[in-house]
Structures are given as structure tokens and as C-alpha cells.
Length: 446
Image 1 (spheres, helix red, strand yellow):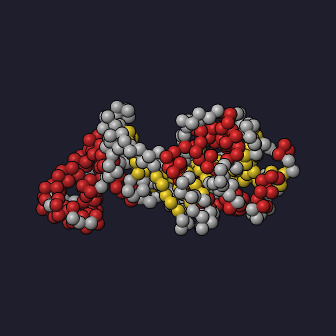
Image 2 (image 1 turned 90 degrees about the vertical axis):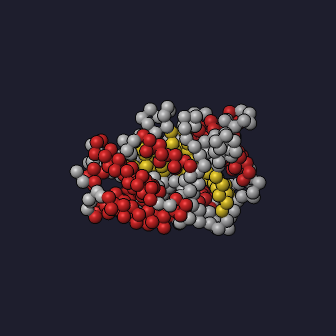
């Protein structure tokens, strides 16, 4: 069986292990012949060229006999093992892959265009996978072992990495690498079917009129992508502070300060939380604050900032509907060490939040804005949201593609008047409702 067929065979453990052994043998031979001190002085690209040349000489001298394609493939595999992340290197080089999921040495999945697929690749052993994991976490000065079996970090190249190993992971060392997609503009999202032109005009009016916007959705629904696109509507002269766990936002304005939280070091010290950064940002004279995701006590600080002079701020929250987003904000706000009555948090949210944009990821991998809802409740009354846009899906056909249309509904008069005062026109597809009680206004449990 050829080298290429051995690599490609997903169900034949023996040949794949044999190929892994071949890579390990030539990696050892390569390390015997190179000068590590000299290699460390070279740039990354020069280092790879040098290793490929040395390995080519070794294969010519000692065998095995391979075709040109198999020889090139073996050299790439060995150099990837020596310099990079082994079988993961070509996956990281593939721009179409947005997520890499390693579920133990024998199971590698990737996400392309919103669809998850298993690849015919595997690590030679648990030990090889652990070596790859250790190489990844060492680049960010972290360690992973039985005493510290979970690591969440960002690579210098921007990818977010999560590692969990035995005894917590029963199937073996598990590695998830999430690559952040390029920044999409709102017109590009329209072309993808995530929203329509009228919704873009409405969201643009909200952002320019300094409405506080919460982007809500489940995992992988495109919250960060939409948040990044919405941030492009902020005037370029404003001072924007972004706060994230892992720096994903790619704002194009000139006056942007990017803050990123920091996990504790190996001694358990030095942690800087999102809440620390939100509090500090208030001392930095921001015009707008953008929080990548609120998930704890920092929610209270964010709400207070939104309702006390930092209008036009944006944040994301993990939830499944507009009503759920508000209830989740209330729950997260109660996690602060500040003892604030649960009912009083309703007042904070009703005062702070203007718009909830709900995103969903559908069965065909597409991501759509399924609802734009306005918060119309006041004080400590129960949350009342008025939807002004809904995605109405059609029955799924044989091609399993999700199709439908966006329905536009009247905007409450007080919201329309606020846009008018800000000199922002209401898009023609949206009428103006005379009173809140004649609208399809839903009331969340509070």
C-alpha cells in the first residue's frame, strides 16, 4: 500500500499506525542531523526550507523508494511534526475550515461552511496527540496535566483553543481549535441571506441613534460576526473600547482600544476578568463600549454603564430568544458580588437595553437574524418586547436548504420618535404603531 493510500484510509488502523511510525522514524533521523542552535537563529520560513532540504537528502540516501508525490507528502508530514502541529498543520492552512475538533487520537472533525464532517486523519497515538497539545499550550505560557486538565487560550495567530484531557475527558485528550472568520460587512451578510436591506437600514439607524443593542444567539450562530459588522456603523471619530475573553472583533475605526481578559497563571495568580476590564473601561472616557460576551457579574457593570451615559454600546449574550436574553441578563447580573434585589435588576435592564437582535443557526448551516425585538417595558415591570422583524421559514425541501422571508412589523411610536429626534429615518418597510397595546407585544416571565 502506498504512503498516500495509507494516509487516506480512515478505517484501517494498522496502515495509519505504520505511516505514523514512518513519520516518527524520519523525524528522529532529521533531529540527529540538524544543528538546533543554528536552526533557532533562522526565521520560520527559512527553518522549514532548511529542514525540507536536509530531510530530502536523508530520504535520497537511506530510502524508502517513493514516487515524487509520496516523497513530497512524507517530507511535509515530517517537517510539520518537527516544526508545527503535525496532522493539524494542513487543516490550519485551509481557510475554508472554521473549527477543528480532535476527539482523541482516532477522531478528527472539522467545520466547513457551517457543516461538520469527519476527516480520514488520525494521530499515531495518545502520546503524539498530547505532544501536539503541549506544544500548542506552551506557546501561550500555559501547561496541561492531571492537576490542570483544562486550558482555554488564544494562539498568537488568533485562533481560540480549548483543551481537556483525561481523567476529565473519557475518550482521550480532546482539542478544539476555533478559527475566527474574516470580518463580514452588513451588505455581505445580506448577500448570504442573514438579513435583508430593510433590516440593515433599521439596525444602522439604531446604532447611529445610540440605541443600546444586545446580540443574542446560541453557540456558532454568528453573534460575533454580526457584532463586528454592526460596529462598522459607529462613526469613525468616536472612542470605542472593546472587551473580550478572546480578541475576535476586527473594528476598522481609527480610535479603538482593544482589551482582553487574562486567565490565571500556573500558580493560579494574575487573573484579569471581563468585569475588571468593564470597570476599568469606564475610567477611559469611552464613547461606546463593546463587550464580546457577557457571562457573569460583569453584566451588572455593563448595564449600569449603558444606562448612565454610555449610550450606543453593544454586547452579546448566549440565549435562544429575545425574552431569554433579557432573563439571562437578569440572572447574570445577580451573579455580581453587589447585593442587588432581583426585582431591581429589571429596572436596570429596562433602563439600559433598547434592542435585542436574535440570531439562529439553521440545520443547513446558514445563520440568520430570526428576530429584531425592542424592549418597551419600564421601571420594575415585567419585560415586554415588541418584535419588529421576524424570519418566517418555509417547509424544508429535498435539498434540505432553509428558505423563507423576513416579515417587517410596525415600530412603537415612542421608538420612531426617538429615531426622528436623532435625525434617523425609519425604513419604509416598517410602519409606526399608534400604541404599544395594539402590537404583537410578548411578555416574558419575570
